[in-house]
Image 1 (tube, helix red, strand yellow):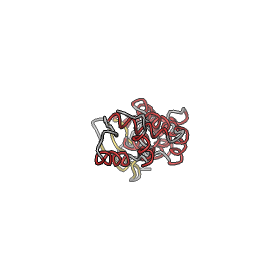
Image 2 (cartoon, one colour):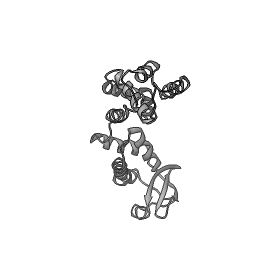
Image 3 (cartoon, helix red, strand yellow):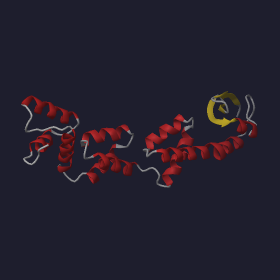
Image 4 (cartoon, helix red, strand yellow):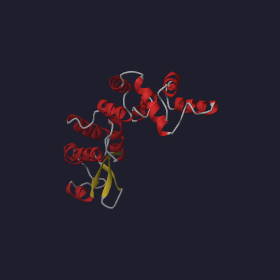
Amino acid sequence: MIVTKVEPVSKNRYKVEVDGEFAFVLYRRELSHYQIREECEVSEESFEQIKKEVIIKRAKLRAMHLLNDMDRTESQLRTKLRQSCYTEDVVEAALAYVKSFGYIDDLDYAKRYIQNRQNQKSKRELYAQLVGKGIERELIELAMEECYTGEDDEIEAIRRLAAKRKYHFRDATREEQQKQMAYFMRKGFSYENIRRALEAEEVYW
């Protein structure tokens, strides 16, 4: 195995290519310690040692830091690690590490996401947002089943949104009512649930 390029990416960090392929990023002191320089030969044993003792360890710490910073889905964490210049095998090793401790759980993430927003958003809107976060559709559907007990959940969400918008259905003109209906339908609520929520006898805002 031949080091074909050592290219600086910052003051103390260097991108290393081996046999023409990106291998990893090392600090200046690590280049010196492992005697990495262009055109030098690296044994398979040394290469794996660097990956195991330096790169994978660093990727695990990076993953933990990212999760401490904010809650993330597996897909979001994978993207962040890729952006940190880790190869796919290193990214997967770091993901396996945090998953082994239960630090990422897409089903649990989806349930918490739904529970925190179901009083303000429609199922359709929440579903689309979770898909956008890279969560598998089967997990989203399972989370939906656990978090929603019936149509009244969406009706309550519509009522809360209407209150937030200071909308008075009974005092509105026909044109205003149609505009509000269109607004809630764009948010992903069904026509029937919108009608039931806004026309309910006890609803006065």
